[in-house]
Length: 145
Image 1 (cartoon, helix red, strand yellow):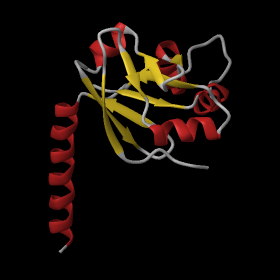
Image 2 (cartoon, helix red, strand yellow; image 1 turned 30 degrees about the vertical axis):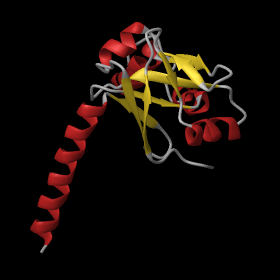
Image 3 (cartoon, one colour; image 1 turned 90 degrees about the vertical axis):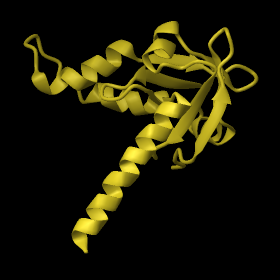
């Protein structure tokens, strides 16, 4: 299975349209899909997405019960916010306004491949995150020496 990898920055237009990078579209289309599934991240100020097939697997992990199960909480939060966004003829999706607000997107968005999924970040927030991650990696490396 092909994976999402690389970082790509694309424009967000006034209508919330955003081009999905061609390599990411190839992954989606390679699975026979014509849309992406996106939700606000539970942990960071970004959006997370993949093919809808990834989220069908998530649904199968939810315990069907009349009594709340804490182990279902994360899956239920994701499923409640998940949107299936069709790709238009130019490879774009239309982001809901609340998603744009959650990720603090303005005129650009950075797609970040993460293997089975991808994230969508406001570019300057992504740069700050990358710097912080690099510092953690360097600190951990120095601790091992």
